Image 1 (cartoon, helix red, strand yellow):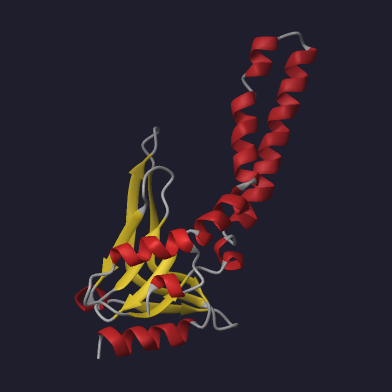
Image 2 (image 1 turned 30 degrees about the horizontal axis):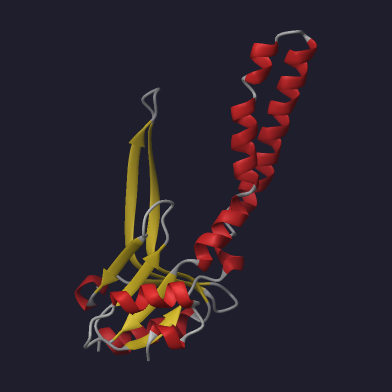
Length: 187
């Protein structure tokens, strides 16, 4: 099976084909479900709208007081609020440009990037030892290959951390995909 025979679209199929070696055969391909990929934006949309509305209120009040330079300071906040409110659009686009592939030799994740050709992550059998599944009631879910934590410190010295996951995220019938990965690479 070649990527060009799949319903990925010509650009994504060509990108996947370019990643495969001559002795590698595709077993499965998939993409994140857009409806699941935009779920993180459910909180961002109302927050973004409130953020932008507050900035508009600030600008109106400052203009009414005759402080035009201060009113203009609200423009970046309106932009940030607008970007947050539009986050479902860019999350959906990112999902539509992401490709998951299982070959006879490895699991591949092709992700888009804002600039440049994108990121390719490759997981061989040795890298799948800590693989785990998160499943939703409808059978969709995430097949996690890698878990990592980002740590940072804010300007006031407060430490924070964020756990993120890499793998076949937001796929339909995640249990079947996990079974296929196990039979193909871990058997």
